[in-house]
Length: 383
Ligand code: SF4
Image 1 (cartoon, helix red, strand yellow):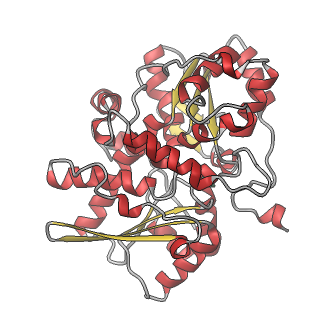
Image 2: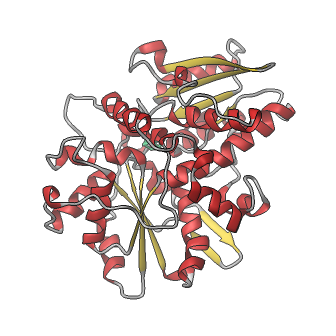
Image 3: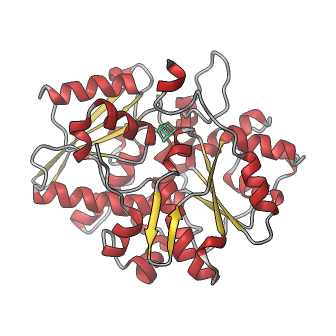
């Protein structure tokens, strides 16, 4: 029963490595990969690399050595997601469009499946923003295809994700002027990436730190923390504050949304922020048992929030079902600390300061929540 009902699909993972090898070998295909924030915290565990050695730059090198044509960091599209989601939230929050809040984040497919089946009356509160994986796939098939001057049909998009549920998320189709099909063509888990590195006989210690390709190269610390519970919320608040006040809050001003650990506060991290006359009540929850308990409390009117982040896996994507498994050891919060460490040392820590995201809006989307952004970067959730 667990196998058919696991909401994150961790028990029924299929292997897509062959599909990716075939695309790499196909001379007509241009293989474009993206690597999710949480992958960098765990891929080195099975390859004998320390967290300092297991950098995103070395994953980029591994992908290029395997034959991927272009490789990007999903942190770029996490920043893009924040631009869309923070604007959507502010619109709902300041215009009182949704009297009975909260707005729920929508980037975790395990959570989306859960709410649709278990709490269908709450589906209307989901943000319409697609996940960073889907947003990146959509811009690869449109904006990037235009940049390369190639037919989008030739672009084969691969995501490296900490997540098995992302394999199902990719089934969603994109309909746009010059392209109709999937945003993402294949999803590999962190474990599958490691298998491919091994089968290509790449020596991990011989990998170099290389940059991802341009023009979607930059990523901020706000995008990096997407992989840890509370990270999406914190990144969105940094940008929402800027949109409201016209200046940045200190980057750590919203750290109260960070989880204190597995057993703290039943997995729910509540926080309240005052911005001028506005009082903003937030909650970040991870793990579906904790989520069920929280939604029941919201239903009973015992708690009230404006914005809620939900991640199906305990600790967030760092603890995802596609990450390396170590029997009896739970590493999610340790991996999450690695992401916060990377954020603290990042040159840019606000999604709205990402120069490549800004350039994409100028050249292509115009502004967050524009008509074009809605066509490509948002979706409609149905019960
Ligand atoms: Fe996937 Fe992350 Fe959601 Fe887990 S928390 S199901 S890894 S998106």
